[in-house]
Image (cartoon, rainbow, N blue to C red; front, side, top):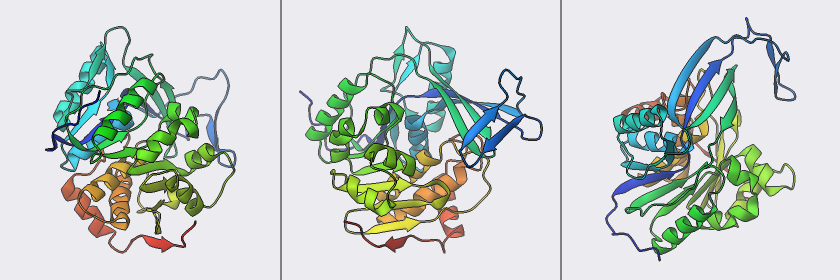
Length: 337
């Protein structure tokens, strides 16, 4: 039986998901036999060739959940993370990083049999291709202290038992808001498997490609896809569309917001930073169009740096960014049914 937690929130946000060591390889077009076929979106190398890189950047403690927990803490939210790390120096380095960022690691489990997850990120012209290795894990949801928000996101295979326990926790604690941003394994298992989580979500957020893939009925206008997911039970649905900005609905109104333009160095973490900015806006009592601006500002900052965390905004820098782009506001779209 899952017990109801005390009414006083110990945390503003608990993030649930995998954490990784990300190694970023910045490919220099001028010196590498590599080209991006933009029409087909293929990153191409000469087979069996030796490919030099411009720079190597290691970022311990990446992964959607970690990015969100760090982003929340930077904005002044009290955050914790539920994650599994390997029994290795990389895992210890990640924990030290969380402590430095003010993220509680009380729910972190050390897997003594397997190493910490690892990803190689190929950065070319600001776009990234990620090679991911997930260690085999056994996921268990710990007894959680009360929190205002749970951010449930990318996690390895064999997560289903933990997910069922999470839904029981949320049923016992209906005041806790859930933000759901599925990762590759959840997406691979399809929409039907996700529907119980979507139904309980205060915020369901995916990018446009993911939204199309899940619905399996071809490309449709984003307002229509938003309403499709809203009808599954999510209170608020957000679809991000890269350079085209973001779209959101609460079922009665739909809004769109362009990106804040600026230099782009690398896009990893753009989605996580948008999501945590959006959640921060809602948790601060802002309406959806304003929360979209918070998310967009955070993403605008993150993509100017290598890695998903360096550019995450503090509360003060968030205010400065919002002031800088004060003229860019969300526009109400025609409402789909």
